Picture 1 (spheres, rainbow, N blue to C red):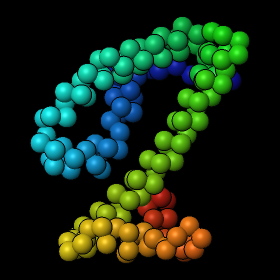
Picture 2 (cartoon, rainbow, N blue to C red; picture 1 turned 120 degrees about the horizontal axis):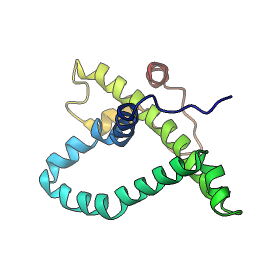
Picture 3 (tube, rainbow, N blue to C red; picture 1 turned 120 degrees about the vertical axis):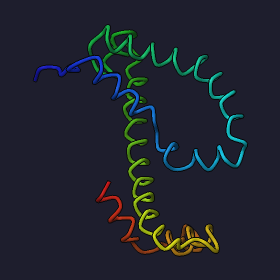
Amino acid sequence: MARQKWGSRWAFVLAAVGSAAGLGNAWRFPYMAYSNGGGAFYVPYFIALFLVGIPLLMAEFAIGQGLQSSAPKSMAIIRKNAEFIGWFAVIGGAIITFYYNVIMAYIFNYLYYSFGVAWKDDPNGFFFGKFLQVSSGPGELGSIRWPIVIGLALT
């Protein structure tokens, strides 16, 4: 099978921006920014972005472009026993994908519940009691939450 490549630079840029705009933008960031004063968040964000985020992103892109192979294989080419580092990237991406799917299922359910503002009196009680139906402890398994399963199917 031939290795696939991006059709254009714009397709790559849009895919990179889409992956950088995580679920926090849709789910938690607006609330946290409002409750903590809004703009104060940008100071540590830009420090971390310029000192860590952009350099690591550029290094990852350069390694991928230069070696034209997967993360595990690229790390094995760089150093013989370093393939496991590339697998961390693959496994980490898979875990994030699973987590994002569950959060998107929550968002679909909250969209449904927002028509009646079901949580207006007690948001925590609604989330843990009615929505998740959290059991009394890890020894007591609850039932399958079908609204979340439906949200996962939509996702």
